[in-house]
Amino acid sequence: MQQVPTARDCMSTYFVTLRSDTDIYDAIDILLKKRASGAPVLNEQNDLVGVLTEKDCLRVLSNDAYATLARGTVADYMSEIKASVQADMDLFGVAEVFLGNNFAILPVMEDDKLIGRISRQDMLRGIQRLQHSIKEEKEEEERDLQMKQKPSGIYELQNLFAKHRPENVAALFSTLHRDEY
Image 1 (cartoon, rainbow, N blue to C red):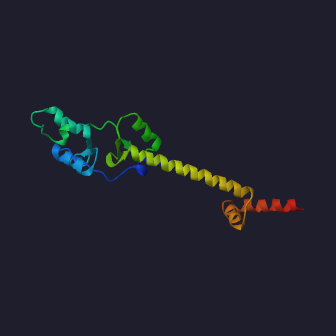
Image 2: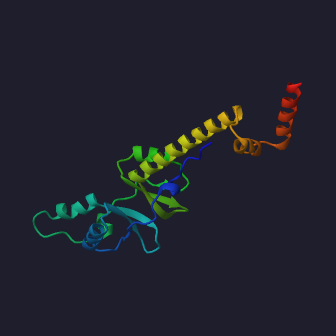
Image 3: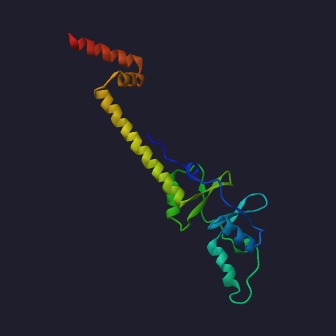
């Protein structure tokens, strides 16, 4: 039976993070430089305290429209974490969290610490991996069934014997031997 991938199997561990006390303009520079649509925000103890998205950064403009640009830190603009997933959560559970929210990326947590992030693209790769595994498993079952019904050579016969307990193989031979007489 195929094992369903978990968030840990599909997550990325290489991503940009920000500190809550970082100047908002420095944070925007980091997001642009790293081509990131957002970043988890950590405090001094490396606890996840929020997320800064592109949309959050747009509030810099709306706060002082047309006058001077607003000032502040990441903490002044970040959004609270409304959803996260646990590292051992399977893809089905992670999909439910994605479907219940509009987030493109979710933090992956373990023991209340941020250990990764999973995106919708990561999920698609996980679905693809699961689909390929299921297909390979079915093909293997079909080959095994064909081999059991009529082994085509000594190699297949050896593989067939290797998959069964010796007493079962002995019983099969004694039955075959009895049928010949």
